[in-house]
Length: 194
Image: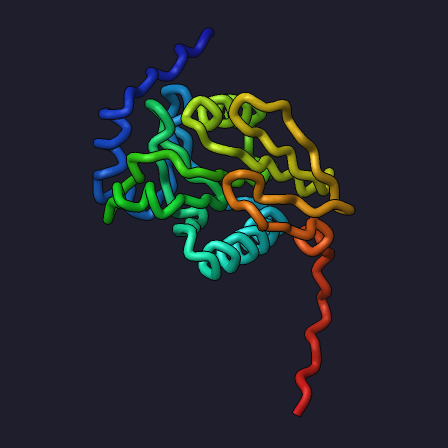
C-alpha cells in the first residue's frame, strides 16, 4: 500500500496552526510547505549553540548592534518559518519588531547547529532560503567540529576547530575562537576559592 504524501501548507495555514493555544509549547517550523516540529537537540548541539549565542550576544550588546535570539526566536524566511538555534538581527531590522509570533524580517545571521534529528533535505532547503532572504548562515557540525559559512553571492567557507570564525560584513570585528566553542565538557566541577 502506497501512503499519500502529506498535504503542503502555505504560510497562512501554518500561521493559523501556530496561533492555536494547543501549539503554544511547540517550536514549529515551515520548511518548503511541510510542518516540522523542532525536537530537542542533542546535549552537545545545545551546549555549542549556547556557547555561540553567548559569544555573539556579548559582542552585539557591547557594540549596540541589535539583538540576538535563541532557539525560541522564529523568523519569516520567504514563505517559510524558521527557528534558528541562534540568530542576530540588526538595529535597523528591530524597528519592524513583533511582540509575539515569528519576526516578519529575516535575521542578518542565522546559526544552525546540526543535530541527529535534522534531515539533510531540510538543512539544504533552509540554507538556500536563508541565502535568498539575504541572511548569512553559519552551519555548525559538532561531529566534524567545523562551521560552514554561507554568504549570499559568495563561495562557502569552512572554518575548523583550530581557526577563529569572523563576523564578516554582518558583525565586523567579531572573532569566535572555535576551539572554545568545541571544547570538551569537563565533568568535574571547579573548586571555588574562598
